Amino acid sequence: MTAEKVIELRGVQQRFHARGTPDGYLTAVADASFRLDANPPQVVSLVGQSGSGKSTIARNVLGLQKPTAGTITYGGKDIFKLNRAEYDEYRRNVQPVFQDPYSIFNPFYRVDRVLWKAVKKFSLASTREAGQTLIEESLQAVSLDPGRVLGRYPHQLSGGQRQRIMLARIHMLRPAFVIADEPVSMLDAQIRKLFLDILLDFQRDHGMTTLFITHDLSTVYYLGGQVMVITKGEIVERGPVAEVMHTPSHPYTRLLLDSIPQPDPDARWTTRITVDESAATPPTDTAEEATPII
Amino acid sequence: MSDETVLEVSGLEVVYSTSKGDVKAVEELDLSVRRGEILGIAGESGSGKSTLAVALLRLLKPPGKVTAGSATFHRKGGSPVDLLKVQGEELRVLRWSALSYLPQGSMNSLNPVMRVEDQFKDVILEHAPERKETLSELIARLLDQVGLEPRVARMYPHELSGGMKQRVLMAICVALEPDLVVADEPTTALDVTIQRVILQSLADLRRDFGVTLMVISHDMGVHAQLADRVAVMYEGRLVEVGDVHQIFKAPRHDYTRQLIDSIPRLGRRAS
Image: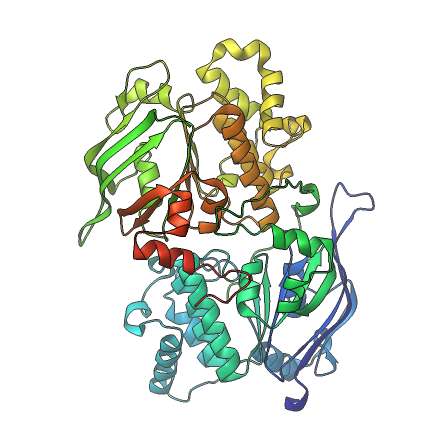
């Protein structure tokens, strides 16, 4: 399967039961088609506002939610019809980083557990010493001092440190794909830049392709690569980042670009906008599912 | 904006006691807030921005404590008080009516089982019972002020999006025309378009109500768009205070420059 590490979405549609809508359903993703290639390694960003369906796509790609229509294939096979061994390989090769660097950890266990679980589940090391070495190397690769994070509990670490532990886990596993769902939205500027630089290092040094889901266009610009703009469950524009940012063709892309607060007091907004926020309200009973604890 | 001072903080020091000794979160901080201005407080996480806010609002919880300094608050038609010393009833009366707070993650600050209008009623009647007759018009006007329809008054918090909840809170904050509103990270965790709407509303509140705002944010873009003056904090100290143009065009302190440069920006790659 190594020759064709490709994730492909065709006509993916995701509807949820929702009260208060005309037909009893809320369409989170209307019709999404795109492909992610492992070769060459790249960053593909999916950008849109809350409620646009971008996180639902992440859950679909990770195999956590089966779409109501359309297919998601990996190496040509439907990811919801893989046998056990194929599914294990898929899970190993497609790794998540979620938004909330707190809820991903079980608060009762030391953070080491997340890393050791990966070592054991995917047989990354044959001895305890080799495992320890691997963990320490991976922590160093994400600029964490093993002595200062190992043996700690999640609440003793900052959000940036917790997110980087998830990156260390990815560093150990070397997946072909990283699915990052708003990984930096809870981090401040300096830590955010560090996190993005580590992702770019992974792309260059370990050949990882990242699907980067965010509402923040400046982050997309920093990462480069390809971008897809999603609104109301539909991808309305896609292309190389520089092209989409400099010559946006869809009005929604232009609105997003124009709404980034520029760090220049002479470039303040002169126009006003209104946003239809009722459309951005998630269905309360289905969309807010808990992030799975790994 | 006048030269009249609303709040004069002097020599403020706040420490958190830990088992390994006291950690100074705010040190030797002097800052004045002028009536009618929007003052931005910038700095990275852990720089003491939020500690400064909660200390001034007297919401600091142990192990945090104020160990030095004063904060003289000049309210309209009242004698100056030291915010760090007022107690009991005097403090209760001050809150909301003269000094209000828009906390970080304030979308979680609304009571989930009360309609929006009842949450307004709680605050307004507690401090200004004479408004009872005109309450519904007042609520509608306040909601309109932050760009929300009157029907929002009848809704429950779960029916509102994050940005709408944030604006309901902003409207409650200004309901009693306080002398000072402290907004802690008012746009963090909201996406760009909603953030822009919130910043518009904050600017409107100043324009139409003459509210004095202290806006805490790590996002220098927010300060550039909204603030008149910016105070930059680093490791508990104020490293620079100045006019927003001066801060961005000619920062006097290295850290301010780094803070501006660390924003990934369209048009170039951050170095």
